Amino acid sequence: MKQLVFPSLAAMLLCVLAPAHARAQELPPPQGEAVLEVHGAIANTNADGAAYFDIAMLKALPRTRLETSTAVTDGVRRFDGFLMRDLLALVGARSTTVTASALNDYVIDFAADEFERFDVLVAYEMDGEPLLPSDKGPLWIVYPRDQHAELQDIRYDYRWVWQLRRLDVE
Ligand SMILES: Nc1nc2c(c(=O)[nH]1)N[C@H]1C(S)=C(S)[C@@H](COP(=O)(O)O)O[C@H]1N2
Ligand SMILES: [Mo]
Image 1 (cartoon, helix red, strand yellow):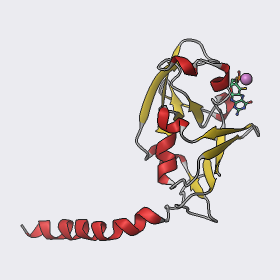
Image 2 (cartoon, rainbow, N blue to C red; image 1 turned 90 degrees about the vertical axis):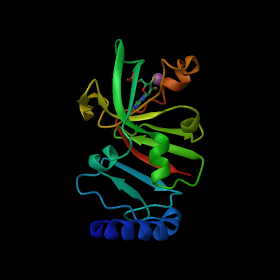
Image 3 (tube, helix red, strand yellow; image 1 turned 180 degrees about the vertical axis):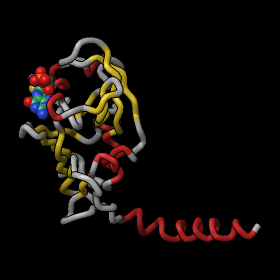
Image 4 (tube, rainbow, N blue to C red; image 1 turned 120 degrees about the vertical axis):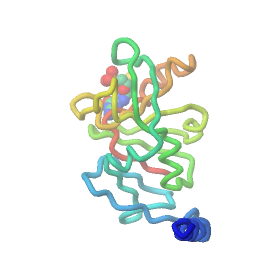
């Protein structure tokens, strides 16, 4: 019985603290090299008003798998990563336009409601192997193309941002 006292105290404390954390939360700083940064209208940050993520922090988001063909590879590929909407929830995104920028300076805007309507993935693995910067990595925005006919369209092909590096919420 005695061991139960401390866990329940901790649970009570969490309940008391949770509402404050839901408003604005200090994210832990990345321990490794930052591979993704999120700027702009976000509530939860870890440096200079932005949120920086190393790969371990991104892998702590609910792991999500998607099998789909792509416009640029042969056959069906298996992607593992996290949902874009889970990342936007984690940083407390407060606006509806998201601009993605890649290592090769490719830039494109998204309407954030798209990430609610579709399970858009930010993939860090393809077919069980880490995505490398030399091949669309380390992060690649992947759409559930085979699951939704409307996504099999050139207007979506150009949203498959490979070498994703930065998001701006505006
Ligand atoms: N980082 C990055 N992602 C990108 C692009 C790019 O130039 N850089 N091109 C986009 C476009 S226009 C298309 S059609 C698809 C496929 O591009 P690819 O055939 O050059 O791989 O990726 C999209 N993602
Ligand atoms: Mo394209």
